[in-house]
Length: 225
Image 1: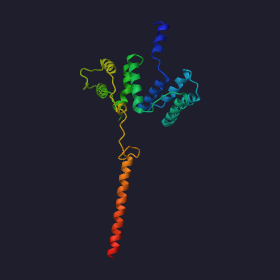
Image 2: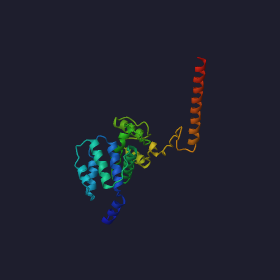
Image 3: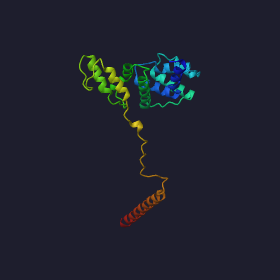
Image 4: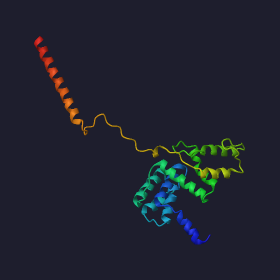
């Protein structure tokens, strides 16, 4: 491939700062054991020409706590004007979709890409990928020299074929983040509604009637004594 063609391919797959930030945040949430995800993201942004001091500060936070890194990451994005949604499900979804693109584009080996997704087979998360748990269980059986259970005919020798099909058909089930905003419940009484005056008028009449009846009762009681 000529240099111009390689450059064209590279530019075609370049992602925006927003996308890269969302993807990095998704990997940060999914891979809780890794402490370099956001630090590496900041370093890559500096290499791309971003010069904000916040990027420098984040790139030097190797070894810092995850909460400190996340705080600095969000601050950095805000300072640099990079829009990022601090939503775990949305971020993980962005990371998975990018991982699928890279796996099918041969930028990363299928087995390595699948290893990146395997935490979802064990973590209690609302992000669900159909077929992931079943394929993961079959791979564990094959590693234990047992036949696969869910995918008929799967072996150690042909597992790449099943990985290829998995990424080609990869989807993420819709979750609560896909639902429209719920309609707020109507309060039992809205002081700004068109019926408010009528309601207040009726309440006033009832109070006056109760006061009048109380006065009559007290007067009759005093006359009978």
